[in-house]
Image (cartoon, rainbow, N blue to C red; front, side, top):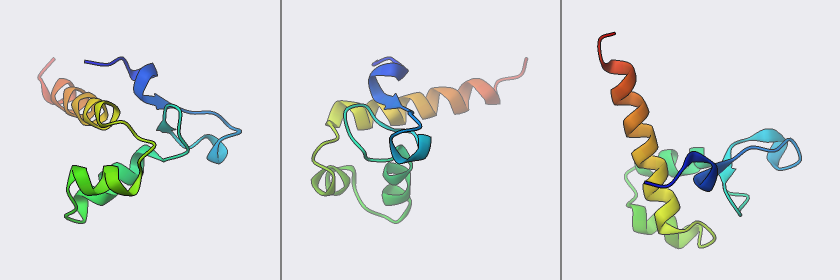
Length: 74
């Protein structure tokens, strides 16, 4: 799995600090919005060719891991 700093970057000078995919100006939120609207990962990647497939998959993997970790009883 890619590290978070290889996938997502936040900088005040890039879209006011909105988390974006590293090396792009594409907000990570866009991935989730496209998937929620029924688009496929391939459709998202076609619309945002600067995002690497590995980055998008890693973002989903990191989100899943975070969700599952927070759902476990402590």
